[in-house]
Length: 118
Image (tube, rainbow, N blue to C red; front, side):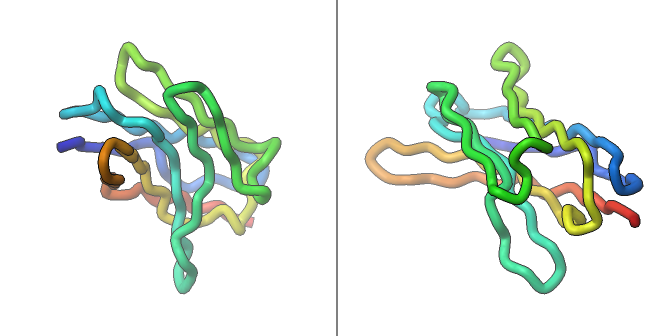
């Protein structure tokens, strides 16, 4: 099992910045992909950014150039630096980890609220 705990959400004005953190614990040695998803009210959960153990990153078009995903392996922590925030970035942000061995297993954090005021 893998446990994911997010932190760093909050209220910020448009144009501001926030950094989300996701601390992982448990059986993390075989995790292949970690990332961030978000879900706004009335909308489906969507991928924001992800990174693989090989260092390949992927971003949603809506956040490219503004958000950066990074990982600190010594702390088993993944970060999402969010700059130039917009009101449309308002959502609950979820940390996600995926293990791809014989099957695919996904793990989710509890989510952290990000609210961007105009």
